[in-house]
Image 1 (cartoon, rainbow, N blue to C red):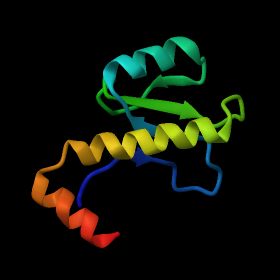
Image 2 (tube, rainbow, N blue to C red):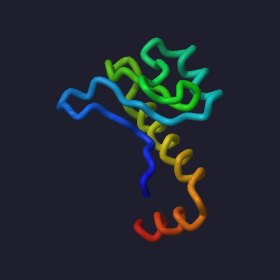
Image 3 (cartoon, one colour):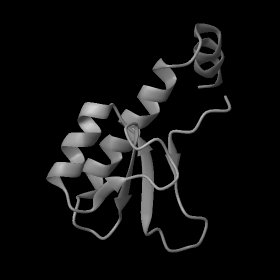
Image 4 (cartoon, one colour):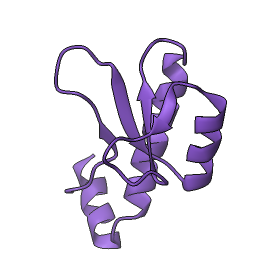
Amino acid sequence: MGKMFALMPVDADLSSISLKVDPLIGEMLRETYAVVQPAYHMNKQHWIMVAMDGSIPDDEVREWIEGSYDLVVRGMKKADREKLDAMK
């Protein structure tokens, strides 16, 4: 639907992932984890970059990815959300 919820490098080595977050959650994650930083070239309040070095469990990162997706979908127009639901 023309929206981004995650950005990853195009090379085979997944070294980081950038995710959209609620600003308060992003602040908490940056304070909690050294590998979570403001996302490069993105709105620093709404996007985080997670270095994928294995220090954060995969299931936790997966939850952050799902949260990013949900946040973006909630911000879409109702008609776009309905189109997206129809694709499932």
